[in-house]
Image (cartoon, rainbow, N blue to C red; front, side, top):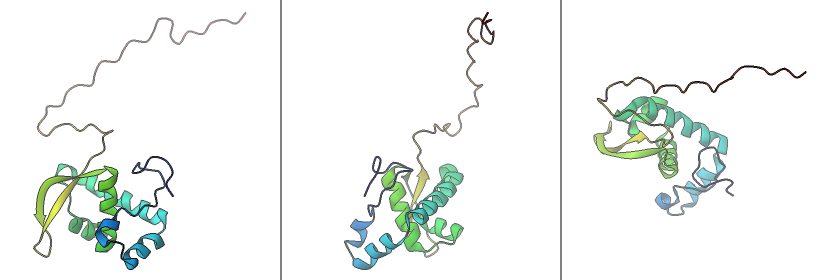
Length: 142
């Protein structure tokens, strides 16, 4: 059952985004459905926070696993959900895992947060518009 817009953070969505990976294997689907929504949401939030903290360097699933001491299966599933939801994106870069394999580097991709491009000069904040005339003046009611 889905409420809200699919893939929108904060909405309940019980679709298994990883079903294409396990191709309907009953054990994987069972693991997904036995993991409570609150647990999956907390895991996604933890992963999202450390990927955001990594900034433009991003992180691989292997790095997330090590940093959070989470099992590979949980991290891989939550990363797939975050990718599907559009909260992280593949940076196009690859880094070696602790096992010597190439892994994609994902970065935080919140469209509501505008990031300053690397090397951009710090600009002063935009000017604040003056208050309208008579702002803050109370009218007498008599």
